[in-house]
Length: 310
Image (cartoon, rainbow, N blue to C red; front, side, top):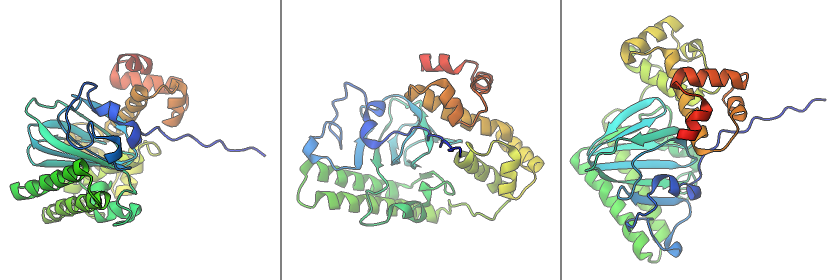
């Protein structure tokens, strides 16, 4: 009897092995976890200011949640296939398993970002319920929001309170940090709901078709690589999906699927030493030659040359 060999998962960064990717080596800032004494740190949670942040990050994947808060300046961010620019008052949200990147950070940019594991809020909300209660942490939601002055001030105040708890580490510090984080997320959710940013799962109008297509590709691109697969999920014909995506984005639906595969490939090539042949297997290519040909067509270079120059 033959034994089926399970395919290894694409590598994802864990929280305690992530700092070297986003902080400069000579960073001396003292906000949040940066240069915080070991005994004051709380497992499963980190918070930083943008001071000392590397000028670019990713594409990569992580197994924790991330909140990025911009108070001034601008930053280009890509979450899956969705691209947008942070400006003053913008928040974005990354969840476990999502491919993300950021670059073009302007010189006047300042803000905060929070990283936490799925079970960090376990005492308040079960890990599996986080995307349900806070839909901006789910494929079906909108992963960014623009807050008005009052709301962004409230969010920044919660970050300040979290930092104060970490620095002073008084009795009940860990519980206070969890509560402040939950209240911060609740503050964002109120604005999110007020702005009606959630997308319905039954609306197939063109207004919603393209963003829903992008979310589905970000979620299923390793298993589903045909436009027809996504047309079936969306309840439209492949021709209608192709035409609508092309009208809205200027690119075909198949190009979007290929773009997501390229992001995934770049993440693995840049941040791991996994063999090219193994990567082609993980990305569901029939053979390494097919993966090499695909990557070269999409990027103009081979996987090996990209890895050497990344």
